Length: 463
Image (cartoon, rainbow, N blue to C red; front, top):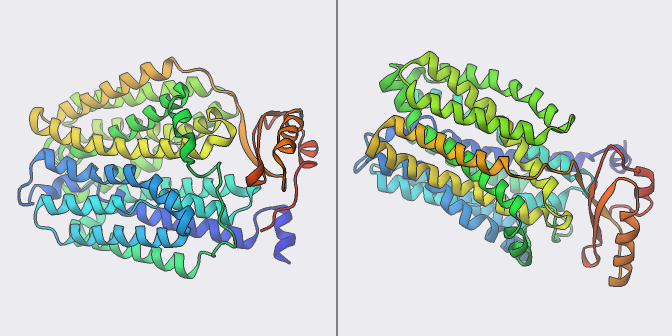
């Protein structure tokens, strides 16, 4: 069947290939970063100059460079092209992996991890995905990337300990370098080159919007939330492998046997709560409840980390809440952010996530060295408590989705009139028409939307 005819019903074959390859590139990179989490604390003990504080810094330092550079890399990709930036970032990531693989001191591992984070391709990947996927299918493509990240995390928690027994942590770093080079080959050989690269306000950060996004109290609550979530994740894994080995008596090569069932069981547990949040419109209740369970899991680990069974049960609660919050937070950003500022809001959100990983590693390592294992888990519980106070005071979100509608060339006056006309369509809560982008950015209520009326304003995609 002709690809254009296929496109009328859904994503074209080219778009599916593009989305799948971009998801694969992102997942390969994140797999390399995540595989270190469950094993590095044990490996760091034998490195020259290692202390608990420096081990924690090594785990989290990639988040600092990632947070600082991902938005600038995205902006550079607007000027010189997406593919060169992504290839450069993957090569920097591979170089950092090689430095860490050959390191015999904690200082060199920290340098390697900094370089890994400096290969900050997240924003450029999202921009290239938006270039390659038509507006009406972009949400599906972004969802594929999101699912690939979740899958890479789950796989890494099991693969890390298994690979550690076969090739050690240096071998994992070498493998990470190979995966990055595989990503480079994918970009060059598989990912199509877009005919046109343009600014996509639903997928990219726009510098002139930063001030307004950073002044939005509801968005800041969500940015603080993802910061806290990844702070807790990273800090927890600064000490959890040590607790399993030294307190619970589980040999390092057996850790995967705990992580595997906990992850497999926790992933489907989050699904009913996601349905309650989205379908039954109980987003705030489910969101706040998940933070409560996250806090309880961390508090439990603070006192009950001397038994494999208690750690397994509490880690199951932690992962269930973590997976739920990882799914809900981006959805909340999309609901809260103004229609034409979603890309900027997601950029700030993503930087907050990586910065949280940095602070979690650094603070977790320092607390471990100063006060012991239990103090790190207790610190995470207190962070969750502070987050709970922020979340409890947030407004209940409007249950709106986002849509990008291609409307063709418009002059400024025509764009203003068109925005008013689109807003009058049943189910459209907000419409912002950007004349130079030739698109309208919408917030819609999918349950009440008059799709036929909305499509009268659309023009065929040019891709």
